[in-house]
Length: 511
Figure 1 (tube, rainbow, N blue to C red):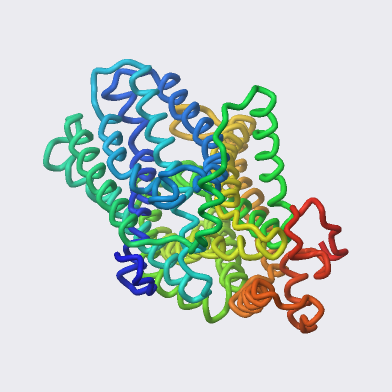
Figure 2: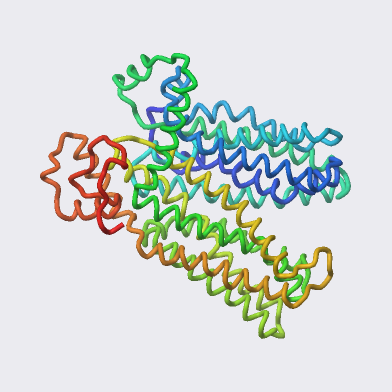
């Protein structure tokens, strides 16, 4: 798309969102099949296979943490000034997506699979973190950013659906015991991901940078730094990461995000155990109930409309309340054993998946507006740092949720490979759902009631930033604007727009 045409059209929104075909598709396939492929066709032991995934996740989390800061400062390099500090990584990452197919080659050793999976995780982080900042780069308009994020979530859901549908068709044609099905699936999706990411590169743009600023970046020296200087740079980066927690709206947003997503992860980890051991049903029934997740596809369109009309906090409240009621519904099914079990479970699961798809929709639709709040404090654009912090905590929470579920199950007396479980283990399963999942959702729900960032308050904030950029006097701020800006940032208005870091500012009492 020509850079002179910067209208956020449906075509542009789809072009931007196509990168999440990889985000939604690749990791769905990996989560469902990679461990099985390693242990069944690649000749690795379960410990070896699990260690590959664990090591890659740890490295990925660390890379994600620093990738945002690197992207924020990429204008210092000629490639960044030519192709963009965000979009360059889409251009570079598109052909590198072909690494994905290497994961599904049989007959290799442990280190081959470790290195290829590490490479894919790092490439994915290199693409996704700069890409996630693009709505903030492309427009400041709340509705237009929501349009971009809605397209993203719809395409992510499409990727998730295709990642579960296509492998099943290949197994049917090539045979469930044929490793070629995995290789063909990997090759097909590698090409799809590469094409989608390149289209995103062509469809997007970045915030305009003045010739003076670009010249300043170009003249910055790239001298070889001593060890002490490198340590200082790393320390400053860590301070920048910590400074994101000084932004009131981001603190609340991150707490809502981590609690709600960890609740979802814990539910997913324990749901099959609930169906098989608590209800004495089958894993097939559990899979069929989880397949109601397809509701997220049409839901993304509706949620985008609701995001504008009622605001993200209210959408989150609906989501968490719905999920809490459904989890209690699952508990009631266990205790009261209804005669029409499958129908009852189907109704609860359908409603639960509506709430779950809302849960996944809200956080990254809110994220593009957080850097605007930060800009009011620091006079800087730090989208990359915020994306890194969110991604780091999200990836860490996935591992933590899964580990805790396993540890609690074992402590509750769960017997590995047994067809039935002791009563204590079953009660532990129910406890994880009713206490763990519901508890996390309640924290997210309570926090959502205090979250003030929405279309109206964001518009007031952006208008004030633009007024100050045009040399407007801080003394002429209206009482309403002052109140909104202080509520979003967590700082007294008089201390804002000073060009300093959040650590330099005294906080307001209501934090």
